[in-house]
Length: 109
Image 1 (cartoon, rainbow, N blue to C red):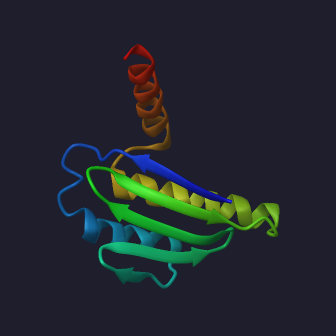
Image 2: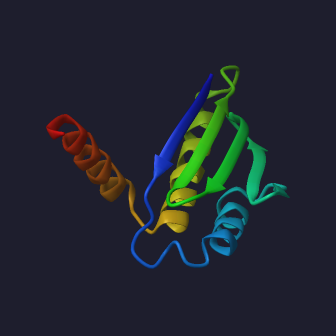
């Protein structure tokens, strides 16, 4: 299953985002990263493929593997959350709040 998500950057985090993303991917996943045309791709654990792009927001495309143990899935999820926090500057709780605010804005429009 392929999922595409968009995450806003905390103020000041967009500047230097490309370098920060590479550092965050290495720190959180420790896997080989393929970089081409400012697109970052890796495979780790329950993620068959993780593709990262930077625009005004962080665009994350994930392709999941279903044939993994619960422990590996939990480990991969924790590493993914670690990456998102380092890359965007927002904690999981803050990202959830931002997502709720975005939904509310679209409903009000």
